[in-house]
Image 1 (cartoon, rainbow, N blue to C red):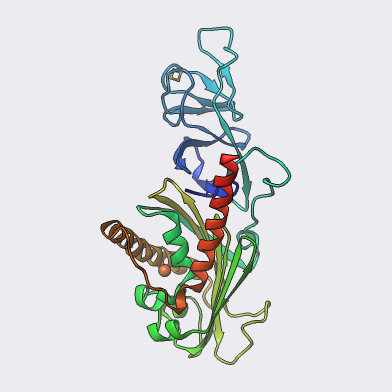
Image 2 (image 1 turned 60 degrees about the vertical axis):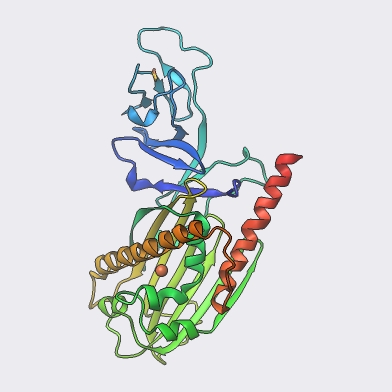
Length: 344
Ligand code: FES
Ligand SMILES: [Fe+2]
């Protein structure tokens, strides 16, 4: 149902405070926690004694103590204390998952154990640590499968129709924007330009544009997440294919982690460039982005409800679907290989 050999987003570093976090990822119940030395751990959310979810337990300096009979588990899943019993049974351990924190994103590996071909460093989300930007983010839960969210993010032609109050603008401009789709391996790249267009509400609230704008959308799809770089400069002021261009930048990070075959976690952040005259634009951008993504959630969940009411839909492709269809082929290939490997 999902490609397993990927780094998936399990959460954000700031979510782990003084209590464990329960989250089902790729159909497996997981408890996430941070110990006193700041080490982040992900364990199967089941005590090996009598199966209480470990997420019902409490954090201690050495690890997570079960909330039923007090077994204490270290971040690697070993039980290190059985209250009232000197010897810890050799089998007293729970499954642990490899996790890594990078740029405040907690990544989890739930696929094959480490080897040179299946394990790599988790992705870098450089905008989180780029001095030009400030960012803020959140977590959505979707009653919809992960690929419908991929489709939505790879096809930004919907922006004018779905997000008219925030990042939208003229719907026809979005639908008519020239779109280039490319990619290699598991990566899909989509670029759209809207020259000399009307700035949408979120942009004018965050940046002192003089009038019309040259606007870009650059989408980088990876199997577990997408990076979407959008923004604009004053129309005609500078080329928008220059990597060092100025203007208003919004760098969105979208970690899409399946919870199950039919539900998903959506971890997102939005980083934006500040303007000297609008030093506090991040809060506006964050609020409007959250409202925008809530609009997407409503659309996608309604779409999924209808897909279930019409289980054999004959869907028609149009020009805007090229990026999403390419990403679906990437996932199809990975699932076919995974299936083949499971049989052999
Ligand atoms: S169920 Fe966890 S200690 Fe008994
Ligand atoms: Fe959207």
